[in-house]
Every structure is written in structure tokens, then in C-alpha cells.
Amino acid sequence: MIDVATTPQPPVDATGTWRIRFAAMGGSGEVVLAAAGAAQARRCADAAIAEVLRIEHKYSRYRADSVVSRINAAAGRADVACDSETLALLDYAHTLFGASGGLFDVTSGVLRRAWRFGPDAQGRPPQPPDAAALEPLLALVGWPRVQRDGARVFLPEPGMELDLGGFGKEYAADRAVAVLVAQGVTHGHVNLGGDLAVVGPRADGRPWSIGIRDPRRADALMASVPVSRGGLATSGDYERWFEHNGQRFCHVLDPVRGVPVRHWRSVSVLAPSALAAGTVSTIAMLMQHDGLRFLDDSGHDYLAIDAEGRLHQRSAGATQAVPPGMCAH
Image (tube, rainbow, N blue to C red; front, side, top):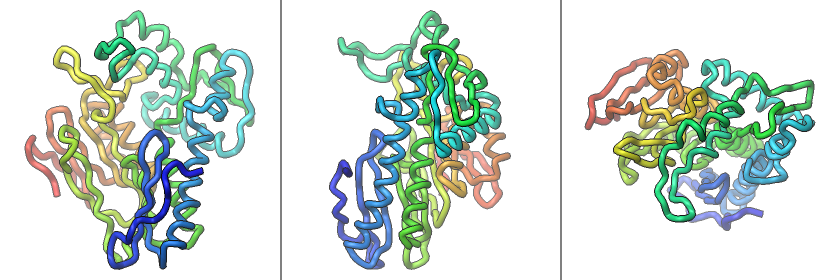
């Protein structure tokens, strides 16, 4: 059952574009598509939303019956049989681990046990954990230790965890777009919490204009990006964070040291798929100073703001940095 009513809203514009909002993956989602009428728009959107919810139910670490939770619950005790979709996602996680030099590690979710980004039960503000809290958790991090034998997966240490949240939304957005295409949709996009997968341009052929948020002003846009197909995703230090003694701590954690990254405020990437865009942006965040080189080598267009507020971008092969206070268009 869809969490939010999916009755299509009035057309966004005169071309017959419909906007259907829903809740999934801990946030808001939206399907935007061109359709001949409300019935067709709802049928196509409901199919795409059902695919997003299927993936959420299957891989969410918040659900005890998910594949990920079953693997984690069996850590140190037993292996777990996995289907071809799950094995393909684990293969992708392996590729990301290698491409990032070990920084994109789907076993690093255990570090969240030491970090909280809101007040505790007594209302006390968050603060960085000490080394004694991080050390035993860092001992549980390490993708190469995950054992895979055919279709079976085993975490060798009790307390180890897999967490596919680092690319789950982007994968779901791409899968939802595939469902829309199968339904005959040729114009539209799926937006999951700001991560976008695009079916095709507007019905009149114009690209979608997608705003990229200013990481220091929630009500302001840093730029607008024209997108006709592929995926657009952003990683940043502004989604979950706190300040302590004048220093900002965000939810993107270095799996080697167990502490938040600091070099980038946000990294947005345009790629052939939302999955590629999201993982490239996250790896760039994790690589910190080396992230700009990684972005250049990726071949994708990007827009990134470093910790000093300088904006770096590449569009149509050109890369530049813009001083603080300026914005690229």
C-alpha cells in the first residue's frame, strides 16, 4: 500500500505533465510524467512507486525481514542465501570499494552506533565520540572480510553489518524509471529525496530544470541544471550534521578513521544513471582533497562546493573554480 495518496495533482503545465508525490525511504518522493489523463498517470506512477517500495522493503536495514537485516542478524553464526538481484548489488559494492581505494565500504554503517546527529533522550546535544567508542566499531569495518560463496553471504564477526543505504535510493530511482519506460512513458522523472532519474525531456522537448540546493542556505538554490535523461545526485554535509566547538560534523564518515569528512560542502554529479551519479558524488566526498581529481577522471559533469565555499564545475568538458560568493549558471 502506498503511504501517501497518489491521486495525481493538476497538470504541471499545458503539455499534460502530472506530478505524483509519495513517501518512501525515510523521506519524500515524486514521480513526474507526461500522460494523456489522470487514469494513465496514476497507473504508471503507482507501478513506479510500487517498485521503489519493493526495494525499500527488501534492503532497508530498518526492517527486520529485509535481506540486509537477515544477513546482519546472522553475522558470526551462519551464511545467508541471496537472490541474483542482491548478488548483483553486492558485486557493485565490491566495484565501488575498489574504485574508491577502500573508502566506499558497505560494512562501515556500524560507525553510526558511535555518532548521533540529534539530541539524546535527555535532550543533550550531540558531540563527537572518543577513540574508545570508535575503536571496537572500526574493528568491524572491512568489505574484504565479507565472505561470498556462490549465492551465500557470510559476515564472519558478530556485530558486522551490511548497509546498502549508500546507493539504495539511486538504485530504486533507476528501477522506477525502468518501470515507467516499460509502461510506455517517454517524458518524466523520478525524484527520491533529491536524487533524480530521468526518463526523457519534457513533452515539448525542453529539458527539465533541476535546482541544486545551496548547502549553507536551505531556502536558496546554488544553480539550476538542465537534464533530459540520465541521473543527477548530490552528496553533502548538510543533510545530517551538528556543530561542536565551532566545528561541523556531518553524516558522511571516513570508514578508515571513523570520523566525518570535511573537504566538501556538497558534490552534485550528472551521469547516465542515478546510481552512477550518486556513487560518484559520494566517492568524491569520501576522497576529500583527491575528490576533484576523481570527478575529473570520471568523465561526468559535476558541480561541487569545497569547505571554503569555492565552486568547482565541469560542463561540456570545461572545469573551473568560482570564488566564494559567486555562483555558476
